[in-house]
Length: 291
Length: 268
Image 1 (cartoon, each protein chain N blue to C red):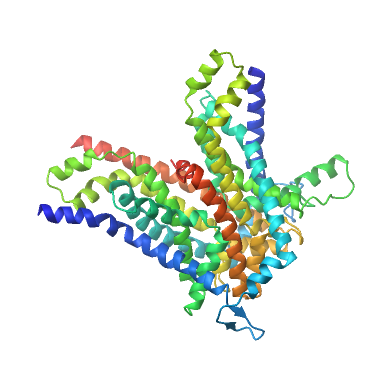
Image 2 (cartoon, each protein chain N blue to C red):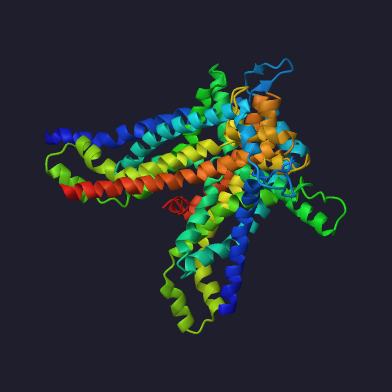
């Protein structure tokens, strides 16, 4: 009996894990290996896939200026989005972590709220604000500052704006979590040793909140680089991002080998970032914001 | 210093405004009587909500999203909770690697995930279907369920379980009589979270959905192609109210249930 229980205990975690492992294995790991294989196949003029080992897709993806330019543009948009999120997001995170107001719980719930509001609604909501018949143009026309509506939408700036609006809560939450974990005695000690408020912040609080800032930045950058909906809704025809190319290749042109190669480029690039990050900071920091 | 603090407070208010004002405008315009559904506001009207109800495509999309969300959340909460119990309650070789593996769908760009799954199933000669959508949604909601349930599970003390076992309960009895009731809030949080993620998803869904099938987000996306209409704002308002009210209602119910249970156990 005791041996039976011990054996059950030994097998228990594997029995519990098996449905998840099977799911991830069959629906993620095998499909991932599959796109690697697919990226070496060839789409022939007849529309059939030529099985074999061809480097044509890779040659096209890696040498064509068109792909390189859009990749650079994507990284640029993701970079600016991340920086803006970090600067703009730090302030409310700091406020919520340090406020002694009773409204703290309310402010925290409000921070979680955007996660519950649909991404596409939040993205398209900017059309109501910036569009030709939107709030700002309506106001300016009514006041009489302008005679005809301004074209503020459908450019790279609005793409970045939409992304910041979407990703800011991720940043605020991650920074908040790390700020909340800082022992308040440390800043008080720094101040009693002669630091002024700003020095104490710069020397103590800021470095200690760095893990949260880094986790938030990683999330913002990875999510921003992988998006194709925001540029479709808020961008102009020239503001395509890399994921748009993937969508275009797979869904519109049905060129699966090319689409595979393109998505692998994105995966390797962002994967490298994640690996570098986890080497130095660990995945745990991201998991922390779920508590 | 106080000066700096009030600056921080003002900046915080501005950031909150930035986050919520556009959504508030969507809801405001949804009730606007103006026939173009844009500014200026010309009075209060429910006509756009009425036209939503009479729009077959939208009603169908809503049903699809609802069914997809419920199935996704049922499946991924069940298997995710099982995995979370294994991760928190047991030690076994390769735990760290398995943990990273199960969280991987969060770190892989959703587009890549979408392409991989789509091409794999098409290679197996399985056409795009509702089943593919469901599988995809399960894969990328699973890690969120795992993280949420795991985080709550850590805080549940083990000694209650050990007490039950020492009193002769089998591990399975202990799980259903002790652990599961204690975990219920965590499981519900996981269910809600996975439902919302599934209900809101568009990135993967656009890759996986069969022709002619629309979910609410893809329907909105398709309607945006034509230009923004007041109907979209109304649909947006419904979605916001739906997804925001749900966790609040669920928390209230959970609170009431646990209060009732405490009362019942005291009455015994």
